[in-house]
Length: 454
Image (cartoon, rainbow, N blue to C red; front, side, top):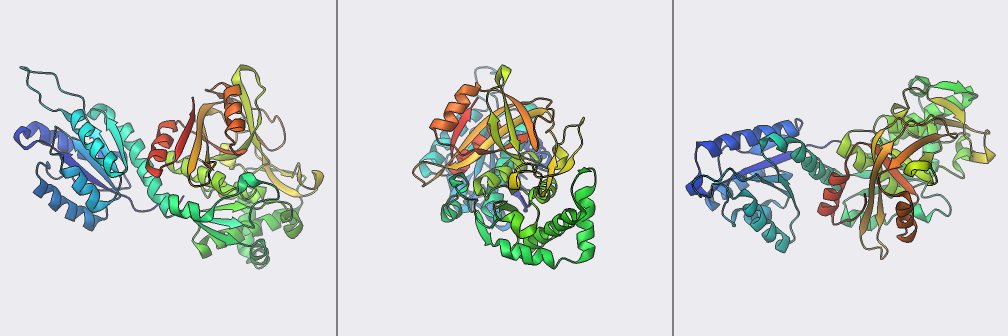
């Protein structure tokens, strides 16, 4: 997902009669934590404690000029209940409440009451229908928690500016790849650009030979050739450059591709290897015209910085709660297991198999992973998201394509029943990293129903 400028508005609040040098020190520390949490972001505010409506009103003017994307309301102590709703109404951006543990009671006097301040103000925003998240942590614990929630807010902003190129619509019979274009625009802000396969064909035929050669180098480097013909390599290199040009032409962040049945007839090759190349440079490409699966990839990449894997869950029958996820050969080469090597092959399925290239085949590397799927609800007027986690185990080349064995945290029969009886689609995105809490928080901000399997 393309990176966009992100600005944090820091509001260190305190009760005026409790303000002292200790709270000023907390304010300075809080400002430093926020700058460390998102080094590429701008942090506005935080120059002084906010104790009155007048101070908050002046700060709101500063924030409006800075075009802040999120407010971090840091309750160093209890504070007036009028400040937060005023800032929320004026700036219309999500709020992250930051409360701190109560200091040791000395002489029976309450000295902070930070959590109670969040409790009161959260009620107000809840009644107003304004989006908010909450972190409760002292200075030593705040960094990773704030970092996670700020990434969620940044992801929300990026989705609102996200543009996906749908190449050729979904594949035949795959209702699981359907997407409601206007629902997406209304609920998440995502725009879909409809692009014909014909335009891609024509563009690839006109690619400059020097650009095609560059694409060929990227395709063949760090991958061994197993029976793929030079003509197929050249066509794939041209396709790669054509897609890059379409990305620039339409200002796209991602693609979902109708990769069969006519793609191989039009081009003489499959798109898998080209998808792998784009996925490897963090341009998410989903298979079979699946828009929501592709968006899930983009979300996971934004929250982790890691490259996602678009896949099916093809086996729930393994011992020790282990399932197998897989797809044809479009995974990014960076996900290859360290004891394997990416291999360029003829496609194992298209036209009966071993007829046309090209796939990039290898087993996916091990590690902790999060699996998710953005999905429409049954009434088609909103969204839900399946969220689960597990440990990817060392996987051999169990079958052609990109296999990945996962020991799931949730009982596999329970996961299977949820997928079947709650009608989830058969495509998922898996990413290395522990982001279940962040996905839940993103669902809160976007009014998505989280279906968490843990």
